[in-house]
Length: 111
Image 1 (cartoon, rainbow, N blue to C red):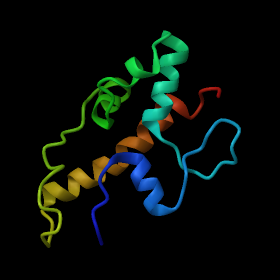
Image 2 (cartoon, rainbow, N blue to C red):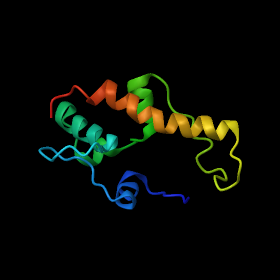
Image 3 (tube, one colour):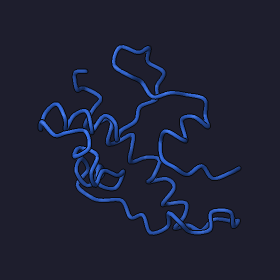
């Protein structure tokens, strides 16, 4: 068990997968931040640089689910066992929120 920091690209490399790209075979892996950047560029006419500003899982949760994620436990000691109930809730929400965001915001959107 180890920590993988650095966001989605590093996690995807560590797991040996790549995010789906338009026209690519579906491998079940998506980068929500990249999807949102592409949406902002297409729908809002933003530059890619501007579209990436202030873009995080918490901001996407606030935008699409109505509440930001509490990231206060992000940097706590995750190596200490057992983890606390608060850490378990944080980890569960950190895994659940992307699925809900995708389902609400991107699952039915045309490519």
